[in-house]
Every structure is written in C-alpha cells, then in structure tokens.
Image (tube, rainbow, N blue to C red; front, top):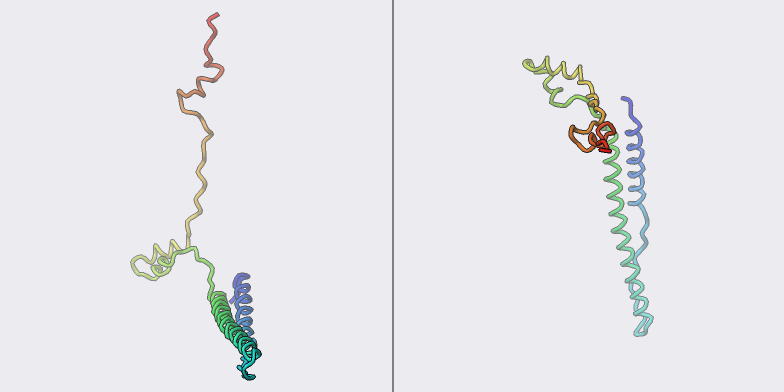
Length: 149
C-alpha cells in the first residue's frame, strides 16, 4: 500500500501528539505540603496558608496535566487512524459501485464507472451587443441627427 504525502503528514503529527500526551501524563507536578503547628504565633497561620496555596497549585496542575494529556492523546490517535484509513475521493458514486454487481442494472453501472462523463466545457459567450432601439444605437455617428442648416 502506497501512502500519500497527506497520510504521512497526518501520521507524523498524530504520532507527535501521542508522544506529547505520554510526556504530559508523566510530568511531575510537585508534592503536597502539610500543615505544621508551631504554637499560637503568627508563623503557624502564615505557614498553613502557604501550604494550602501550594496544595491548591499542585491539584490545579494535576487537573491540567490530565486534561491536556487526554486531549493530546485523543487528537493523536484520531490523526493516526485518519492517516491509515484515508482514501482518495473516488470519481464514481458509491451507489454506482454497489449497482455494478446488480444483474438488472449492472451493465449500465459498469459503463458509468468505466466511462466517467467528460467535464463540461465552458459555454461560449457572444460579444456584447446592446439590444435594438437603445441609446447606444441612437448615439452611433451614422444615426446622429443632421443639422437643419
């Protein structure tokens, strides 16, 4: 089976997208921080707020990592499948191909499949001529009114 340039490009982009999704799934997003109590001073509140912010950032990174990984994986696999199963458009309609084996209409369908119609020629356009009795005819020099002098 010979692959076209379009199929090769779709396959390569799909493969790159799939590899990037695997990289995205394996990224390290950090570790969680725990709350520490120092007593009743201000350092406890500051440390606990920083730990909570770090945990929230880590959870957001996990969600984004999973989301981007899924989108890249689905796009990559779709492009790979599209590249593998991409077929060039056939000149014959699928209905004619299914009719080709029909005993009643098969001969006509096979003739239509083997002898596609020629492309239609562009219609010949005659040069523009203004309709009779228009101002263009009246303005012609031979039709100009004569001076009574």
